[in-house]
Image (cartoon, one colour):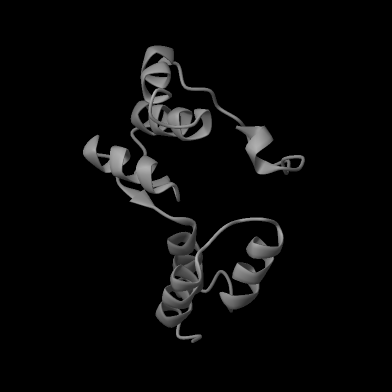
Length: 116
């Protein structure tokens, strides 16, 4: 959902609504609207992965057979593929913009990136 992004979306980003509204409504009994729509859309699109950070949404996604990756995993993958040079500045920027990651998760990501 665009409003969860917190600022205008870049031109390369497009919103796609899931068609299975009954599934979205069912999931919304347990999760927020954004997570519910993301899970429904991942199923419809037969996505290889779904980027999710919410622990409850991750658990439900796994139970539904959806492979998930978190924001930290995406950042680590970007470094591994040399899309970015360093992880630490990105984590700092995310934190400054209000993205919540525990100190433990940040330490784990930095360690995995070889930046501890």
